[in-house]
Length: 451
Image (cartoon, rainbow, N blue to C red; front, side, top):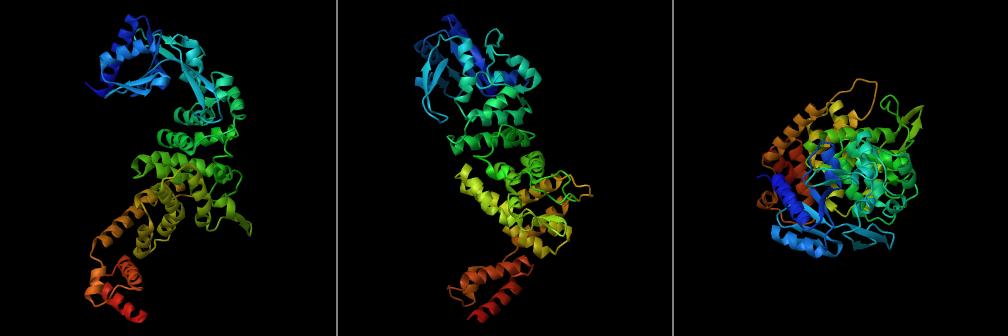
């Protein structure tokens, strides 16, 4: 039996036992939404109505080892089971943050009041586990049919600022539109009390699950919700580009196109999360250095001048050092591969490039997405094959023996202030294609010059 079949069996058995005690079990949330969209979800969420918490606990204990995810909130699970079980609850806002709520379990609140705490009508749908009947108090079925994200309740929606980002994330993943009244209420919600972890969580869901993650930012722009968390992205709006190469218009349009092109390639990326972030940050330098020279628009050295903006942006969203280092490296290098390929540069130059790259394969993918993300009228050249072949040559070169510290010691050199410099020099010689014997000879000659 598959995990999904096992979990569904547990859900039905639970519902039968709940019904025998006078209650009702409903599938709720995203599981119902996705099921009605024709996508059977793996994570099953159930809400149990009409029985006391103690009775539910007794039932769960007959099904396996009960785990209390949040017992005071009426949230449970079973060990080795993918079914989350909850009881209806009321929430009262007591602060400004995403978690600043007092929660009260009320199993007899009724389906309408229970569903009212949900964010969007398509997420407020409930489905009787045993009968399959869909309970729809707020028009979620119609909104699901029309691809509309509409908030359930003005008061409860505005209490949780994360819902603005969730709306943008859902819009990107499902390619839905926000209802006008939902856009309006989102414009009135402050996002400054949110934690970076929560913001990054919604961003990465859009990046890694949506075919068109650009919609995430388009929706936030529509909701006037970019300024606090994404000012560097907002600054791309209206920054001009040379129409010869960028018929799509400003840097904002280009970046959104690159994001969608990157989404087509993310499954090939070694570090998808960092890869998608790099697609977003790659032109953060253009607002800082775009200028018109002799009637032509240029953004010279934007890949370097934008590193400060990219780093501030990344630090605002994450503490993950590996991720930050990767994105800054990709941002700094993103122009060079296609330039070198266009010039048919020497192998030594591409060797040096790939040696600097934290992830050369992902860098090649990013360059392809950057190129495809412009609507230039000029004929484009796909340099992927050229760069992939050069990467093979680089790895072939670096697989050969190179000069080591032991080689220098065997030649009579002692570790000192010049030792590291000599190893770097030997490494450069290897990148240029010299064999170990020749590289060692030149390195020793260099050592004499430094003494």
